[in-house]
Length: 142
Image (tube, rainbow, N blue to C red; front, side):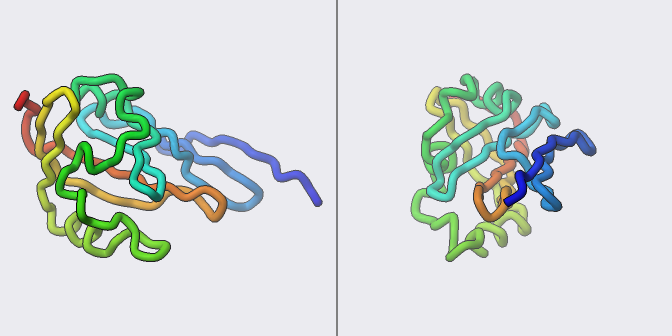
């Protein structure tokens, strides 16, 4: 069995991993956009990574968000399944397309409203969800 060579590429300011012939987005998030909250979730809805700009919006360190359920930040997701089978819940995709405004509330009381976009990241071996939240107003304390 041949050993697959891994190589990381920086293309259009996005990090990709090349394994054999397969291009995979890497789960860790970069600070490409200073005004967006970008979270990586495991399939159980637990936050595994957060961009620094997003944590600044929420008034906390990225490490404070790790292993917190996404529903602790987005309370509207509390009773919504993130996945339907092996795909993102079509209802969440619908909410993204229509521009639904989600409430985002940090543990430190910072509140903002934003549009959320849900996408799948990874390949067959590793599968993650990426949630990108674009604020529609200024964050404030509740």
